[in-house]
Amino acid sequence: MEALFAGSAAVTAGPGAGKTEFLAQRASFLLETGTCRAPQKILAISFKKDAARNLRERLNERVPEQVDRFASMTFDAFTKSIVDRFRTLLPPAWAMTGEYRISFPNRREIENFLSDTARAAPEEFRSEIFGIAPAKFLSDVVGPAPLQPVPQDPTTGTEYAISEWWNQKYRRDRAPVVDFIMLNRLAELIVRSSPQLQQALRVTYPFVFVDEFQDTTYAQYTFLASVFPPASTTVTVVGDDKQRIMGWAGALPNAFAQFAVDYADTQFELQQNFRSRQELVDLQHRFARRLKTSAVAQVSQVVSVEDGVAPVQAWDFSTTALEAQTVAAWVAADLESSGREPSQYALIARQQVAGLEPALAAAFAEQGLSVRNDDATVGVLKLGDVLKDELIELLVGLLRLGSSRGGEPEAWRSVTSSLQRAQPSSTAREIGSKVDDELSDFLTALRVWLAETPLNERGGADKDAIAEALTGRLAGFLRLNEAAGKRVFADRAADIDERLDAFKIRLTWALQHVEDWAAVAVAFTDEAAVPLMTIHRSKGLEYHTVFFIGLDGDQWWAYTRDTVESTMAFFVGMSRAAERLIFTSCDQRGSRGQIADLYRELQSAGVPSIRIG
Image (cartoon, rainbow, N blue to C red; front, side, top):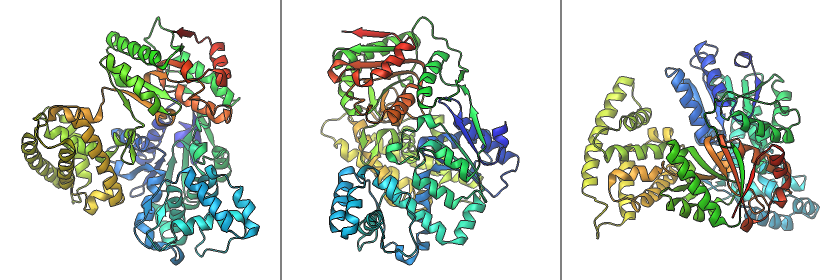
């Protein structure tokens, strides 16, 4: 309650303590009490799209009449929207020469850039440029550096390298190429260059939330402090510094301490756990103390119904095939006895899940089950992001409605809700009536097309052509080339094109695995599969049973190089489990020697280690 009523404050909480729930409650309080007065809004910034959407949905359940005054989005989406809407406010020296393109520079590209730049730089700058770590160049060098309205001549090697990066990528004759760190810097410059926009943003958003604050980067924090200073904005940050696993991407090592200096030293700590049974919470606390000696033990609020099975175990195998077969057989047997859904189980690994997928997929298939690799690439997106994207969910919803003859009320509500948000009309009644009529007409035509395009006839159109044609029909109905649709589903046409391409690729895959249209939407989402993912992708999620695959040398080769960040990753992965947590290792992937201290801690906690094969 004290945190709900506070001004600017930091709220820290361990896994499962209800950080998102707290933000939803605080938003409800601010809106319902008039503390945030109409037409003012709350800006909630998250680091993952699904987290932003989850927070908005929770608020919609509480105060649906107020949800339009709650803007929930990712940091990247917010800064990108500023660039897209207000790029004309850029100072002349930074004016865009054309439509920009987003890139994701890899390590080799940055290494080559720094090497070439150092050789071409004035002699007094060369050694400093050669000393810049490629892995940290964007996050720790370009990110914290504000852009000057009128660029100045560089006085150091670092400044020279930053200047050359902008010259080669952005300030060139061809259309500019930017990454999200550069978009952040451009957005900050736009706001800083326009007092009117500064005032508009601060009046519009007097309250700002930042979720997963421990992962805030240098660029993001400096943007926050510049655009929403403490004198004008009440800022609430929530997170857990023991889960800071984005250090490689430039996360501040002391985000909460910096916030205390710049905004407020008011801190609250949530100490209850609403996700995991007490045995798992106690194990989490052992590793929490390795990361923060002052960590306070959480108290589980979960009433466990699991009896007779050790909640935590460590399985050791001789081969990867035996590992996969044992895990698959165990899940199949547990499904049979419990009646749970496959989606309540998860296979989580440190990295390289693509290498684990073949053996696991084959073993699960033998049990009549499937594995869904949420880290698989679909176009330029990851499958996990594809399945949670609002536009793609709408496309799947339309397909689900078109391939059925009723009995899909949830799909109808979801589709009409999304369509209503895209309709610029004066009243909700007009929007609802128009949407219902247009949707009914479209579904009638779609059903005719689907009937004329069977999937099980030989010699028919190939699956690529069918997916192409269907994607075009759905996109045409949504009129995604119009401004109204773009504002809802993406900021730029290029972003919509990426989503449509990912939808078409995944749709082609689904068509190859079914024989009739009624099964396509189910195949597309593959909700009956057991998800496979990296620790990074698992963050914020929870499952009844988690298999922590590959707690061995191959997956954890970097543990001794950065023990603290690796332990944070381990802490995040293990805390996804609600009832059961099973670690696996395999001789074929390497010994446990490199992470012996993790196993010693597990042994000290009484976790049984079982050798299989």
